[in-house]
Image (tube, rainbow over all chains, first blue to last red; front, top):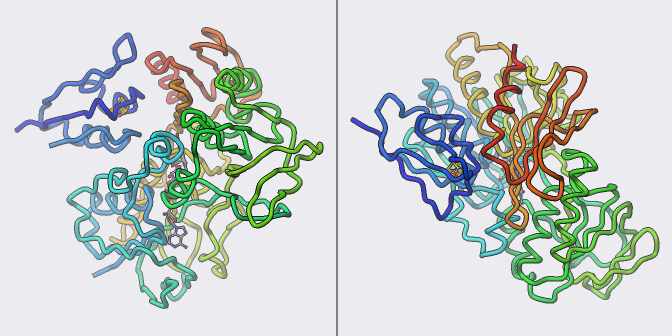
Length: 63
Length: 393
Ligand SMILES: Cc1cc2nc3c(=O)[nH]c(=O)nc-3n(C[C@H](O)[C@H](O)[C@H](O)COP(=O)(O)OP(=O)(O)OC[C@H]3O[C@@H](n4cnc5c(N)ncnc54)[C@H](O)[C@@H]3O)c2cc1C
Ligand code: SF4
């Protein structure tokens, strides 16, 4: 099983809070724009859920 | 089956409920909220939701499946409590019994007694507040903002974007001076001035003039300012009244230990979010309330784990609490981001850029780096955050 990650880029303000919870999944690039991987291993679920919790814009959904 | 009552249906209450479940608590959870809404996100109320329209369902937090069975008692405030009897009484007369209690009732904006008409005076804490303000922000309307903290400044930026005429009156020497310091505060002031905001710093409001509705504000130096809408953002008062009579330390919010537990022999009680005055081992032993959005999540997780342990008859983790305070703010597409506690610093150093452009500012005290603020430099703050986290030792 994998975890599906979706970030609503209309909502995302590139604060990078998510990156501190799961740096292998979420990253700010050199221009400060959020980059993320859309599918991660099931073992990463808790950290990805945490990332969704701490997103100020509540832009992250997890499946 | 044991039961938990959570008073306050905001972010802290929500996270505490989730953490109780995540830590194996299977009893009943009842969340009491005086607002009629399920927990929703407040920061947009001074930013995009104020600019674009207050759509509360769109602001609601996602609720995890683990808390599907929570009983939400919304639209009724807790008015009193008896910790020895383990009961909370609501405004509608209901009394709820509990085995464990979570205090999550947050804060409310402070109101200053100012003579003159009262109609037209607003605050910004709830969706209802934002709704009332939103309806009055029109092009050309004279908006007078009391207080130059984050909420005052964000509201000023939003009101300008909507075409209103905006003045800020504050006793401080610069906007956001306590968290940012005078230099960066001045830089932020100049950004606001470029967008047409007028500042009256070092002043307070003596009185309002008007018939039923405020029309003019009279400042301490006699200046008269037109004021169709007054928005007051001059600090906060903790919602602790319902806890009176239980012999608790309510001097500034509710005091807790590092496990977020409240010292009382009566019942297991924890506190979370804006109301909780708690020690943070990253910044010495002083207990503080921290009104940042990330703290309800951090304190909620810890408090939920503590309460679940206590109700299971286990000893909770009483080790140091080391959550990283973090805030952000959005003003005219400028992004401020902070980690740590810049407000406690006694030495401030601009390390990159200029306070009038993208920059990074370090905040120090005798113990070393205590905080960092970046303006439009979010992606470069990670190493500072790491350095601050290393203060845990
Ligand atoms: C306009 C605005 C903008 C903000 N912007 C930012 C930002 O950009 N960045 C940032 O870091 N932080 C920001 N914050 C702060 C952040 O929103 C708060 O720190 C956070 O909401 C605190 O959550 P809480 O659960 O502790 O309290 P709250 O969200 O206030 O929840 C407490 C709930 O309890 C209810 N309640 C109170 N008394 C009772 C009672 N007796 N019985 C029942 N219910 C009761 C309250 O009505 C409320 O619904 C902002 C806040 C506001 C108001
Ligand atoms: S925390 Fe949210 S807003 Fe910030 S970068 Fe991540 S997804 Fe975007």
